[in-house]
Amino acid sequence: MAFLERVLGVTAEDRRQDEHCQHLSVTLPAGARPGDDLPVMVWIHGGSYTSGAGDLAIMDPAPLVAQENLVVVSVTYRLGLFGYLGDGRGRPANLGLLDQLEALRWVRRNIAAFGGDPGNVTAFGQSAGGDAVAHLMATPGAAGLFRRAIIQSAPLGISRGRAKMYRAMAAATRDITPEMPAAAVVARQAAAGRSAARFGLKAVMPFGTQYGHHPLPREDELPAAWEAVAGDIDVLIGHTREEVRLFLATVPALQRLSRVPVLGEAVLGRAVDAITARVYGRPAERFARRHARAGGRAHRYVITWAAPGNPNGAAHTIDLPLLFGDERAWQRAELVAGANWEEITTAATALRRLWAEFARGHRLPDHGGIPGVLHHHRA
Image (cartoon, rainbow, N blue to C red; front, side, top):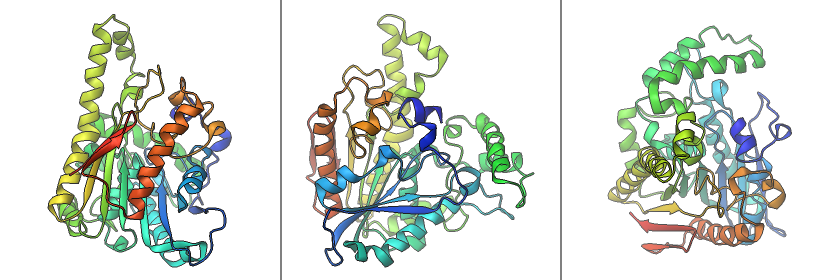
């Protein structure tokens, strides 16, 4: 929650929590009518599978919709213990993923009434939302529900080999009962997080999809599941240049080191590069190459834009103000401090255009980019 407040500028008033949270919002261009067959983009928000919502002000898709004349559906789904920690017995796993799947089914059934084309749907998400999009691709029940996937800053490097951690988390919360009030369940979530701490980088995002639990295949079957849909789904996958800089900056030892003249910043920069590559970069490259080898079309991108002089650099979530929200929504955000809104708008206009062109089904060049904002290449 501190991250939402400090970095993204989201206040407590924006974060009302409710166990009955499964809903979606549809944003349409002015004048959209049934039969217009506009491209549809389904947004799945991030937040480490523990926080966030599809309709926060900083994720308002109105600028994207107005600029590119398409329909955006924003999905809110169950999180934390309510959505993502099964125990293999009475407590089911992947309920948040099933919420997302049902939202895609709703889009298939109903989006034509809003002017959208149910046969031209792009699922896109950032961070945990990008991770969710990747795993929806491997979900048998999602076959045919979306034609393209934009996977933004998905921490795929920590999504595998998590079974032992999940067992420890389930054991730490085994006293939860169906009769327990929702507030008490939320309180037990901290215990689950503490039990994950000994599992290293994986504990950065302790909650997440569980393999071998409905509707996902076993972990060893996952590559084959992705390969099976490669010819049916185009992929745009990538990350920001300095994903982990704002996280490492909160580590006291690294804070002290960064203040050492010349050497400190160099060491911090190397740590940022190494962990960004480990968690985001190399896994995204492997994902794209596997998709291409299996007969699919895949592009890789890296976002390089940062607010001038901002110590966070091109950090995790820097893509959000380039896609969503207006000046008022982002005015308190540390992430974009140092940039005036005209600078942000210039970069955002170009990025929204690229995302929309991909969503329309237009082929991206084998190599391309937006100067000062992003570069991409075909896998």
